[in-house]
Image (tube, rainbow, N blue to C red; front, side, top):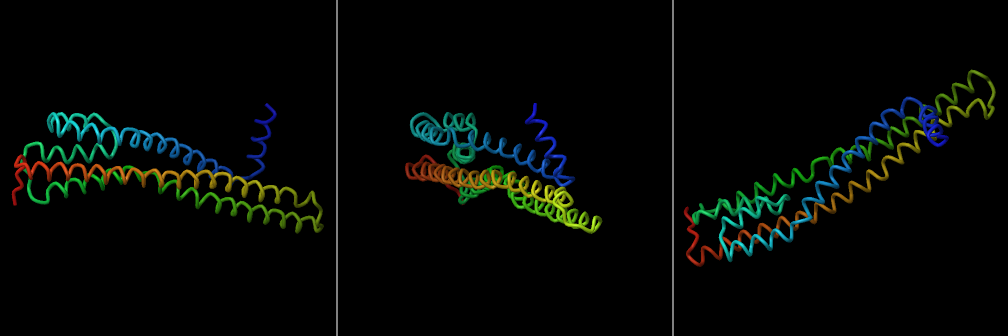
Length: 219
């Protein structure tokens, strides 16, 4: 109970700038939770789906491979599915397969990067809001000095407290958000590698089918 009261009091003592800082923290937390779940699901089955799809495509049928890819979430499976849908009829136009895979990869990458701009913005803006609160607190401190005509600790304590609280709040928000942003960028880079592996598997399958005379490439 005491700790809750102290946090509430610190929030009040921080002044009006604490409200946008709290909003930034809530938005950042929501984006971090959503991105963590999204990227975990996207990466969880990437390797297994590539192996399962390749095995089904070479051993059973392209239809079975497409069903496996369709039932698996993630960008790697989406690329495999897009490619298999083009070659399962055993006829494809020249350059069509590469174009479809490229378009699908761009769409999936855009989905993976969704929300990163918000995190980057919060990581940059939160400290600036804190520094703005610092300036506001120092203005209050100097106004108190000017009004009283004397430099006493009690006179300037309120303004300095506002300055320190907003600075601390801004940095407390920006640091974990920045860490989360960099972590997500690293995870997306790994998923891009998975997408490139999926692309190569589809192209290798198409080339093998063409060499065996099972896939017809038309101009």
